[in-house]
Image 1 (spheres, rainbow, N blue to C red):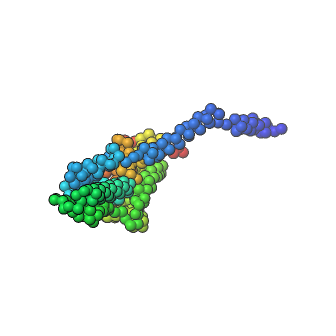
Image 2: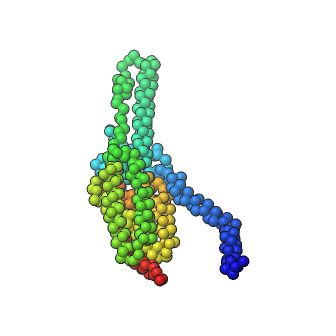
Image 3: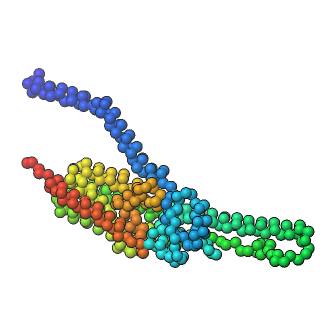
Length: 379
């Protein structure tokens, strides 16, 4: 055997030992499996918990009518289901709906009416429509009861020994009057309808998830592919502009989900995805690759489930519905809904929330500038 072969023999043996001995210990493998199971349980809880625990509660509505009329109607609703606010007139109730102070209204009187706003929340509109059906049923039962009472009185007068004698002050013709009395019809009016291309509001509701994922993807790519503080600033800004114009073009120009001004919608979308991208890029600049995972958790596991994109925030257990509006998914969804269907609403809060997250992300990028420098390559 040659000297070279003898020298190489131990090396080959060492490589074989290393290859055969590079198995993961069973304890480590089981710990990894347990961690994965715990993560999937957390994900399930995060996404299923809002739907499971949500219920019709504290729904703000306006009511037009006397206190007795309002109390008679609202008392039939489940305890705590409605948050009734008075309105001076039908026009006042519509104005409150357009300002997004309430989700609908009940107008009582000779012409009872239910005012709904499907663009605000199809779920809330359905709940109010059910109240209208209960009102109609109650009116019919009341008229039937009055008719039965009139018939009983007529029968009693007919069976009375003095039935043939004229009765002073007797309500002659009471039965025909009761029978001919018109039954009021409760009408349902949608004062803020959804787009005809999205009649159930599903497109507007699910549009929030692609925007969340888009912001995360943008942040991940910028974190991995771009070095330098100012270059990352520029990349996040450019991504917000280009992404906002492109996504608004799809949602408004193609799918016709969004309404109103295209440029305003593009600005809202762009600010939302730029804010998410800035947070992820900033956390990566501050703490490294773990920052990408932390940013994704904040956005998709915390912010998205309590964003109230599919139901009123009042339906979530307090205070999570309001807390969700302080995160990017909730603020973005609310802002796009108000820009498209409620121009009279005060949209300052969601604009400020999105701008605040964007500023925080920019600060994190600046603070973590030591991680924004290109890695030196040794020659």
